[in-house]
Image 1 (cartoon, helix red, strand yellow):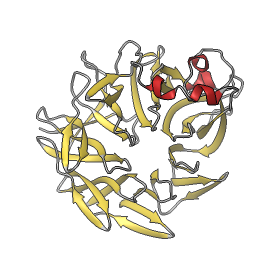
Image 2 (image 1 turned 135 degrees about the vertical axis):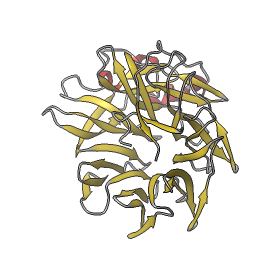
Image 3 (image 1 turned 180 degrees about the vertical axis):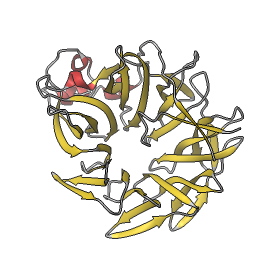
Amino acid sequence: MLIILRNLALKTYVTALIAAPTMTLGANPQYTVTDLGYGKATAINASGQVVGEYYAGGFIESDGVRTDSFSLWSAITGINDAGTIVGNAFDGGLLYSNGTVTSLNPGNASFANGINDSTEVVGAFVNEGVYHAFLYSGGKYTDLGGLTLGGGEALNINNLGQIVGWSYASNGFQHAFLYSGGVMQDLGTLGSGYSVATHINNLGQVVGYSPPPQGGDEHAFLYSNGSMQDLGTFGGTFSVADSINDQGQIVGGAATADEELHAFLDTPAGMVDLNNLIDPNSGWTLREAMGINNAREIVGYGINGTGAEDAFLLTPIPTPGASAIGMGLVALLALPRKRSEACHRGSDIENLP
């Protein structure tokens, strides 16, 4: 029997360029926080345009102005540097470009999850109860096939046309895949059960989540140079990586020792709680960081000072000497990544129709 596992809590679905002093607990704030209103911010492009979802639909925030869509979108999942967006309606995936909405639904239902700067879109369509990963490019659909047992979902695509997502492996569980040059590669797991690849940068580095060898809850991972690395947690039992930029900076959410979800930024210097990089008097608890661009702007969701769950934008605060520190970025990215001790948390299991 094929089964699909999804973490329902997490998948509704550096600064001064990562110099060590900026990662110190209690340091001066490294980011300002902008409240984007109700919902979750899911992606940000090079221009700082933000997209996301909320209880009644999707939204886009541009130049400080938020536009909500109550009737068309149920969620907006991606935006490229030209401002073209993809997302989902209640009856399938959608592409919005230059004032035109295109339905992306080659099956009985569909999901549009990611878009690159060539306006290539990836997602999944459902046919006779089976998920099929697809690529939409130039008005044509390509079924990406699958791993050993087939099926799957494409979640992200980079500007080289490399695609990541999940498909069913021989053990009946979903495994993270990398699709490149017409070939789908199984990226394996952290050591047990399943894995899902959520994002890929333009260097081919992949992030996602998978349970560690002892099983249990998923941990955020980085897949690079043929190896999958556990990014650990903040002392709790689970974590998930949502996005990675071209500097290798990763964002997501991780559990603290009391199992509270906190947004993280992970660099070659290690994982840091983003709540320690903002003004402690801001009133915010940042829950999950879901997108990061090459300007190190970060989006996600958290609890603001009034107790509301809102989308946020983190903007780096310029620091003296940032240019000189940035010159050492290439060397720093080559360092081994430091990891915290692995823990885990269970997932919900649904029978695939």
